Image (cartoon, rainbow over all chains, first blue to last red):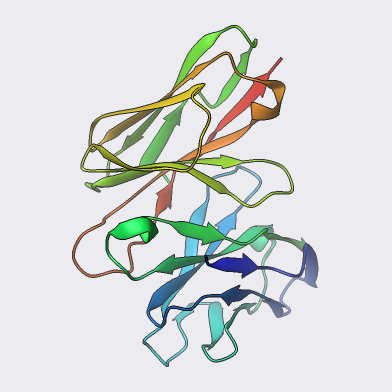
Length: 119
Length: 115
């Protein structure tokens, strides 16, 4: 079974600075997807960024980028120019690329990292 | 944020009550999910429906009963719950055919308190 580990329960950053959130995962599969989700205090979980394992290029979305190290099974999220609105719980998630079977629809989440942004 | 809606947003119920949670997605997706989010625990997948058919029941107690009448609506019927069932219940939906990456879109959740 796949597992996702976020080793940082809490992180903090000054506004306009850069912060990196860590995520490692364990899988025997070679094809999969990785996601970072953000859950602000209002509780609506939103997708921040995604990475296909077959792509070597790291995904970027505006101020958000990932460092995907497939061999090390590491998938960290970098937030540049942090803003007060970035304060939230961040979840790393894994999803098998297999269609059907026991992996169907399953997102495996990490425990989450609470990010605080200081003005 | 209005792609997946959930009602009610907050629910307090006694252990002998029967209540239902509702989820609706306006994204044209074919798969819908129920998750349980408890404090200090990772999200737990409860049920998966694809094209109205249940494809996953993640060892959920029978006091939780899902219903999916069509690809846009999902219900979670609750009866004789326990205090440890108090949690945030999240609904999500996704496209589950064709090319991935099949990202899931979440609703705002129902905060359930069992007294």
